[in-house]
Length: 492
Image (cartoon, rainbow, N blue to C red; front, side, top):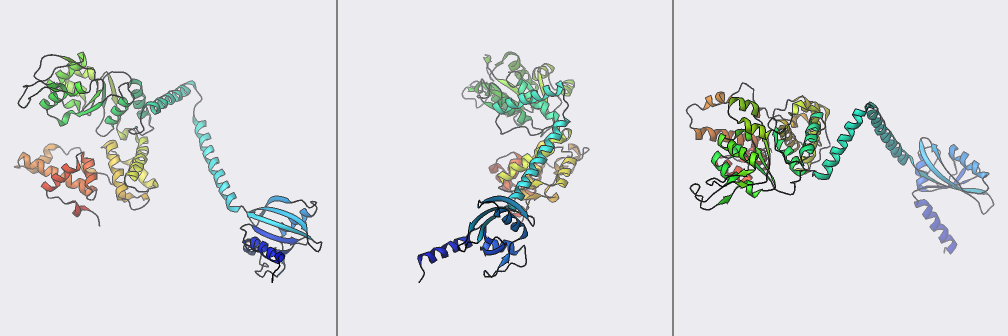
């Protein structure tokens, strides 16, 4: 029957064997009296004379033996330190004591820090690389007053941006051209001046409108967006300026127009180059006097509305052709913000691509780590006739179709049908519809467009509706009319 002392000794031995640190008991001659499992596993891989037989006496590793011998003259005090043995970083603690026979013994507790040191080294190297990059970039800056003023101006612009503009809708890009657009926006945003925004389709004119309104003194008032090209002339006039009772058939009561409803706010008139001469005259009155007259009325009504306008039409050329009033052109273009095409600011392409990548990875609950170098070059080499809108569609489709965590060349597909050769005119397209009624031509073209977009997104109605800028319900109704089934377009 075991005594209490024997049980205690057994428990202590079991504890030492189970410890994750390496524990060794050695004598002053360097002979190992005891090793726990962690030590046996580690040193068994370093020297062939270590055996699993606990009764066999083994020689201590020479490097450790030297440390133990140094501890002999340490007047019985514990010895703490680190050492590299066979490439392993070890932290040791050596505690000398006298055995029951009076012999000199040493407890050695060792912790393997190799992996920790490896991570520390990698982290240090990473920090050094970052520091090196920053040093190189800073050294490239010319130490001149002009550069310092430029940086200060950019800092003030960014501060103003983060203080007043929400994160959603930020213009992504670092090109000089885009920086000039942002600087102009923040410079004129808090004024009430009329702004004309020009640029090709898809460059982000509406985004500029959002930035102007979001940083203006009217940001807490409504922002109303109207596409002048989507509403016929008579409806546009009554919609903007309202009408009196009896002004036309169906006008059974007085109705306020958008200028009255949005009083104190901002109205954005998109595609302003397409409005009729009659609407041009009415709009000129608003810009000159701040007054509107309801359809069917004759009393001017004072309004306080800021007007922002946009067009992809060359208004100066329209003025020369006589289709646009010169006085209205001058009133609209007090401040003209021209947004350069994407091919004119190629340094923004990858910034935008990564922005849209993150956006649609979140939307589709996908994880795509990066865009490979060949894909980047492919994006940079494209002319982007559809500008930012086309780039967004390409990345949106690529994220949806990607099966890996990295985009491949097959995922990047450019919509060449949307921008055919320059010599492909409307007249040449209509030649194929010779003898077909207008309704038939419109129906056939509409069907082809819907089919094309559904094929592009493999039958995803929601995405097709988003690109076509119509509601899902409306798209389903058109699909039903043309007998289009999205199931047949989905990939297996």
